[in-house]
Image 1: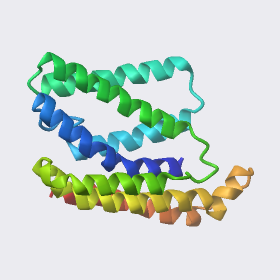
Image 2: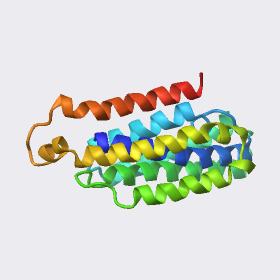
Image 3: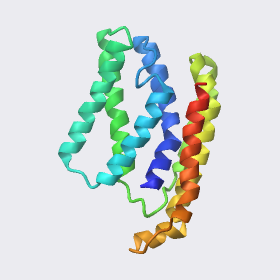
Image 4: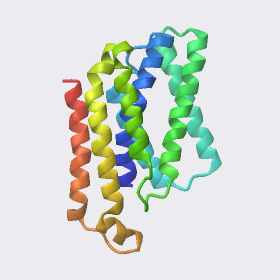
Length: 199
């Protein structure tokens, strides 16, 4: 579960930046769950952790989660945006896609490290760096935090998956709090980074 949370924290910023840009361009939204880093990232991480803890989940849970994602997109457009119909529908779809990504991430086997995530995430980070000049100002402000968060979170997630305490736990053996401490420190570090980004 810790590995899942760290992986979610790693990719949350990469996902947030295009969501923020698209919600700003389509519905002129400001703030809200798709427009605020301080809201989106904790919700994304907590959602993945909760989904991982509940796995395996039934089809009804997927449908309910998708509906919740659509509702978040609708709220972004109607409450924090201008509420135009095309943008409202577009953001509803984006909300559903974000929720489904949380589900696919949470549903994988966390006894094994994620393969290829660091490579694809690095490509996404490079693309986001390349387009930063034409993006909204908040994109450029958050970009250093997002990129650092991705690399630290990805490596920490891999370490949490392959650490001796994780292997022992997957075989039915006990883990130790001392072994958990580095991962907990990383999680606390992410929380501090989110806070500092908005001080």
